[in-house]
Each structure stands twice: as C-alpha cells, then as structure tokens.
Length: 248
Image 1 (tube, one colour):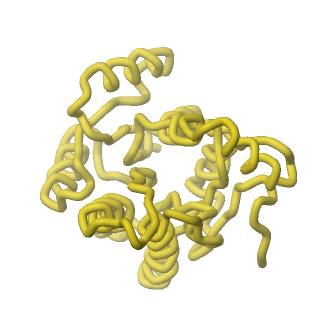
Image 2 (cartoon, one colour):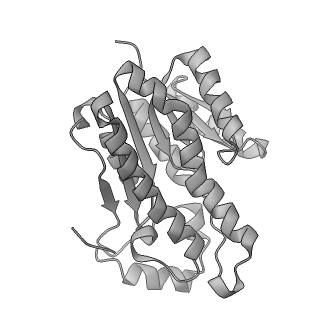
C-alpha cells in the first residue's frame, strides 16, 4: 500500500511538532506546513525531526491566504501524491477584552484559526473524496466550549471550528472521509508557558488531574482519529483537557 500523506498546518508549533511525530510513527509521510518567515524557527524544527529519516518535511504556507493553500496542495500532490490526512492545527491569539479589541485583532484570529481551516480543507477534500479515503482533524480548544475572559475572538473561532467539523462530516461521510475535532485544554506549550506563573497556578488549580497537558497526549488522540480503523467516528469532538471541562 502506498504511504499516505499527512499535512499538518501549524506543524512547527508546540502541538504541531508532536502531531507530526505521532503521524510519522504511524507510517505517514508528513508535511508540516507553517509560516516560513522565521528561518531560524524552521531550521530548529527540521533539526528536531532529523531523527525521523525524512518522514517529516516542511512547506511554507500562510493558511489565511486561499491561493497559497491551493498552491501548497498542488505542490504536495505533485511531489508526494494527494493528501489523505489533514490536521488543521494552525492558530494564533490576540487576547484582550471585547471593549478593547480592535477590528484587526478580531479579524486576524478568525482569518487564521477559522478561515485557514476552510481554505486548507477546501484545497484537499475533493481529492480525498475521489480516492475514497480521508481523515480531517480540526484542532479546536476547551475555550471554544467554555469561553474565556479576554478571548472573544479565539473562543468564537474555536467554537466555529467544531460547527464546521460537524457540517463537513455530514457532507463527506459517504465518500470515506471522516471529519472530527479535538479540543485540547491547557498544555505545556510555549503559548501557555509564557503566561505569568501566578496565572498558570490558578489554571492548574482548576484542572482535576492537577497538571498541564503534554503535547504528546493531544497528538495521540489526533493520530487515533487519523487511523483507517477510526472510520466509524465522524462529526465528533474529543476533549483532552484533564477534566477542566466535562460534558456529554
């Protein structure tokens, strides 16, 4: 069987690297897609995954640019074959209260976190349907479920991402394509570790398991949903948050 190609947007971020590694271990040819403007950051990523024997590569893309997403999908198709697995993990924050939030802060977050998933998915989903196999996983957030002070933009985008997940899941289920979302809680990523220690302590105090999550714990769930054996799970949201938010 031909090696399946997995595309991970936000692939050189804290969660993205762990997701790329898990998918590579599962036998995928992984393309980590992210902004290529910081060459030092890209080089550090490539050095960090050098032990995967070429299973993980890098492609530059701005997911907020629909033409760039289309071009990336075409490059991957030409060089590796069509994308069979897509993980939409690209995301940014522009935190402030709504009363202080500028239109640019709102637009930037929605354009990357929500529009970006639309652009990249639209670029690859037809190929998945034509081949009769596809796995799409959208990385949402616990704050898309609970809301968070100072994150009206981020919470709206992440909640919208799961609405997108459910609608698309219905559209492509008969084509062998599943679409799911994963909602991480607070994890040991650069974004969270940059939060003042006193704030982090309050966050951890509200997590029943008593600690932050590890990127590998999120990546393991993403990898599971991308497996051929997960064909009967679609339109679902899987929370991985240490009990921070519980629902059914």
